[in-house]
Amino acid sequence: MADKQAYQPINCEIHDGYELACMRKAIHLVEWKEDDTAFSQRLRFLDLEYTPEGEFLIAEDQEGNNYRVRLDSISSRLPY
Image (cartoon, rainbow, N blue to C red; front, side, top):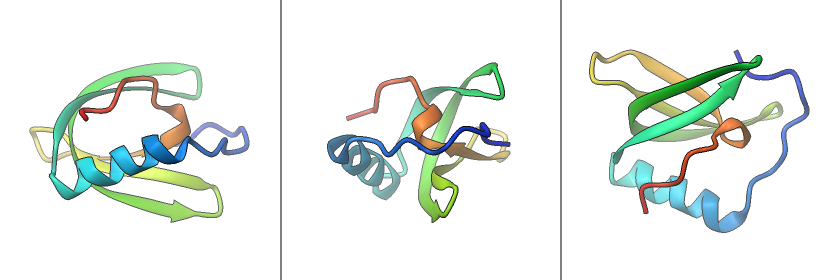
């Protein structure tokens, strides 16, 4: 579940990096915060999703569990 705060658009260069990582199906450590809880997970970048609530990274872990992470909640660096 994403934070209840209004979505804060991310920098275009960073957004481009997410798109590239998805195209390459990159596997990278992603750190983010949801509802005051910090997460850190190694994920395969699959796609980006755009909704009225914000932009989301669609990813999966090694076990095949799916993740939907709001881009403005991610604090880790991009793989590229």
